[in-house]
Figure 1 (tube, rainbow over the protein chains, first blue to last red):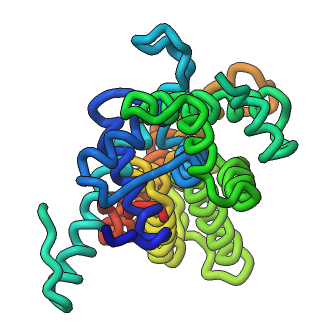
Figure 2: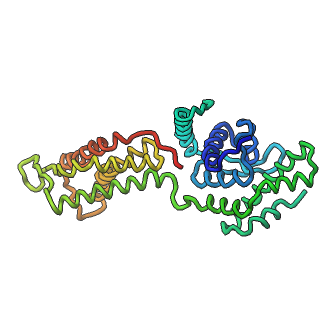
Figure 3: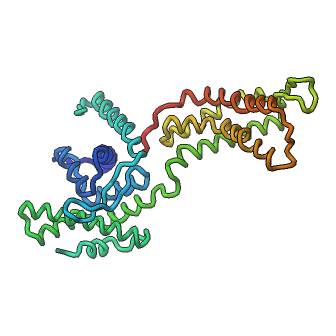
Length: 113
Length: 224
């Protein structure tokens, strides 16, 4: 499988995390699992790549982490999308859409959207 | 079960983020490692090997440490509303008042027009046409700044109208309270003069401020 460059991964990771949290609050491991599942393994986040991204997004006020009890009874830090995070989602989607359109025009790269 | 928290602390060292935050980070990372190891075990990997493999998923711990520190120290000094509203609004207010002061110093002086016979207590209106002409620039700067910072259209509007809103507060709140509380403020200010001043210093400047802001009132750009 072709690896994704770190900078692209970071930028797309922000969009992926915001989009996932728009549906429901999730803890870190669940976020990384769902990103891998839903992208067919193209985007994969491990401990080292996921948490700095989450902490950065939390500092920006896009997400808010709260300790809550998971289904297995363990306390997990669930990330909730904030109002500010919701506001970032639409322009980020638009930016990535434009990015793929531009790539498609110049290099024939198609996107699923 | 391995002491994940101890292993993480050993690898990350002291982060200098305060005991509470560091404990939270270590606990959260430890839970992630436990989940990862459990998932590997479920796929048939032996417990010890699964725990080791989960820990080895971080290939460069010093780099991971730096990434955490970099994320944790980013943008701690300014919150969202400060960036998208208060700073652009303050900029607009300052710029508007500096322009007014410059025009009062270097001219042309504001235009006075007496509504009555021209006696000192008669209502009059006063405004500086060059100052009003300069206000679209103020509105444009504030709206553009707010949009660049990621502000919504309402933030852009409020920031652009800040000079007019500040004067509205002055007329609606400060002057009536001053009349009641401060014996030096003349209580016989006439309502007509009060209304005329409100129109010429609030409503009139709001129009060019809005005209200047209008081309920039758009959905925010995503922050990088």
